[in-house]
View (spheres, rainbow, N blue to C red):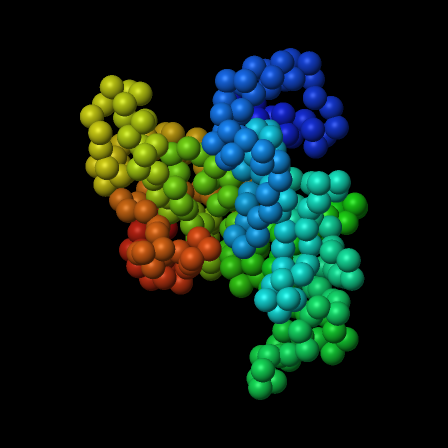
Length: 296
């Protein structure tokens, strides 16, 4: 049902939904999607998302079940204004077109620049920080890496400060790989590493509830991530997820090696912010030995 929901939304975005897919979607709407909408109260049609990236697959899933999420983007420095998908102008995977009065452009290094009356005039009593982010002609350097398509929709592909530069000089935006890898049902969190390293690698954490189901499906006793991190069958499943994620990037940007961790990344553990963004420096320090082993 989840796969059909995603496929149906992707077909809507392409502008054509085949008869077979329509029939499958109608069946699952009665069996599954209607129950999801009813659990939300039965009348929800639209929702708005901001903060951490929603991810294209999750966006397509929700539209496929009949609750379209309108993703937007902005900053405190822009009074939260920026871009927003609309019911009448929507592209799943993007953060929408500019809001009224907003101007966007992409710098030579891929950074998204924004301008408009809503952009701050500067940080309070901090001229140095203001000069670092705000150009003289009013353009604000957002720190996000992205692209604008021919129809004016903005796609955020990563954070400038999070870009990985391999020892071979290849720039890699980890968010693209991480988003696709987290889409796998067994994966809870992941972090892509490889700065100043010869290739890209990843640390992966497991979803405990999904892991319990995975064990039950195979007639195996319940086990923890620590018990199964070196299990060959589980490793093959996660490797397949990595291969699927790698389809979104070039060979030079692809994940070459991965390691399953015995714990999850959580806010309580200090690995995630309240908006569930990775605290990369914390993870890099705490799992330095695991990362080093990926390049041993």
